[in-house]
Image (cartoon, rainbow, N blue to C red):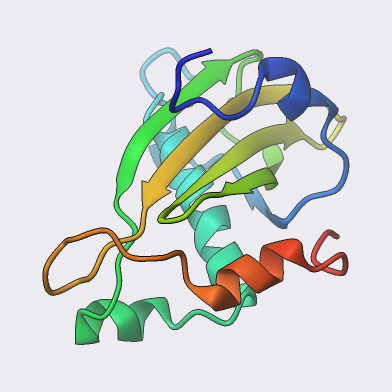
Length: 154
């Protein structure tokens, strides 16, 4: 496993519950000429669920970005496509695992069809930085506390 990878395929597939989840349709504009999801769209789906997690943790993401107090740029992302997603499919996009370091956070993601079929798994790694200097900063305590709380999983 590469250093930036935190989770194995088996860990992501076996994870129970979700730290954050969104149900959404695969929209017409999300598919390519082959009729299946256009590959970068899954990262948009991952990002939307990740933002829901940050909001649930009490972070003011728009405010932090506007004030330039903090940002968490993506430094690594990957996805494995296990089953096709087509226009009209309803899916659950889940953030299922998290690892918190000093200034970085890693998240495992899973996209499941409503019949339970796992269509996509992936992971993202973000480094928390000052919005003014772009230098690494500690992971916000609110996020760290939220992820450590046993009541966070759905």
